[in-house]
Amino acid sequence: MIRIGLLGCGRIGQVHARTLRAMDGARIVAVADAVADAAHALASATGAEVRSTEDILSAKDVDAVIIGTPTDTHFDQIRLASEGSKAIFCEKPVDMSVGNIRTLVEDIRKSGVAFFTAFNRRFDPNFAALQARLRDGEIGAIELIQITSRDPAPPPISYIESSGGIFRDMMIHDFDMARFLMGEEFSHLSAVGSCLVDPEIGKAGDVDTAAVTLTTASGRICTITNSRRAAYGYDQRIEVHGVKGMLRAENILETSVEVATEAGFRRAPTMHFFLERYEAAYAAEMKAFIDMLNGKDTAVPGIEDGLRAQILADAASRSRETGMPVALED
Ligand SMILES: NC(=O)c1ccc[n+]([C@@H]2O[C@H](COP(=O)([O-])OP(=O)(O)OC[C@H]3O[C@@H](n4cnc5c(N)ncnc54)[C@H](O)[C@@H]3O)[C@@H](O)[C@H]2O)c1
Image (cartoon, rainbow, N blue to C red; front, side):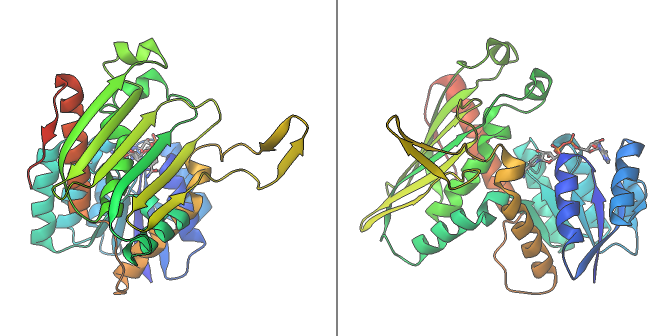
């Protein structure tokens, strides 16, 4: 039985707690949150004890920690967890600073603890199946990848102000997906961004509409587009074009019912937002984490994947600000 300490009982912490309650082989023994009520609510739902973050990170009866606290707390918690020899499941982004993540890569290497960067979209059943078929060679060598990621509506301005910007907060998932699908590192990147949704986002120093083109040394191309708004709901699609054909994963709709009248064909809206759309992915990523801890040969995103996605996000921010393409170091 893997004994888990859960840090952060907010939106994503509650998702992971729900998954673990339904899983054999792992149990949440302790939870912590800066807000006592949040910790007590999740403790009573899971049967876990409420403890302080520091107590959990050094506890002898905790094998692994889930870090679901705000991003600016991850660095200290990861360091303490690795000193305390705990396996680590850390929400994305690992940290806002590439320099800090490099320090953590070194810490994790020295301590030898298992580390999982929670890039949940790799575990979405459709995206995972698409990637597996790519690797099986069904469409031959990749030539073009197109990733579309649009939120139904922007978050509050207070969130934007501390988010690190659209590339680090939102497109970070797509940078990881681009690497996951391409299977080859990118050598160059070029980014543009505009403020078309809400001028307040611009005043907060961010953009709400962005596109990035990434190329590999062998000339393969990936385009990612993001918007903080989509009038028709959460839009998450992938298309890969290869020598022998095309692989595509479409949106998941609330139902598969379609109505046809003389006005045309009409289908259901897309699943509302990430908590609903990626429910299966959150469950599958946690299973992969527990499988890894049980010694199963499971491919999971590690801390280097967190680092590489952050390097791409930083480069995209720089490219947008300067209007110049960025060459990526190996
Ligand atoms: N993978 C995904 O799809 C996904 C989705 C949402 C959020 N996230 C990431 O998860 C993290 C948390 O986001 P959220 O939306 O759940 O935030 P949230 O604000 O809903 O929850 C964070 C919780 O952590 C608590 N907290 C703050 N500082 C703490 C500390 N030092 N020790 C213990 N608890 C502390 C807060 O009181 C809050 O309850 C962020 O890094 C975010 O980027 C990932």
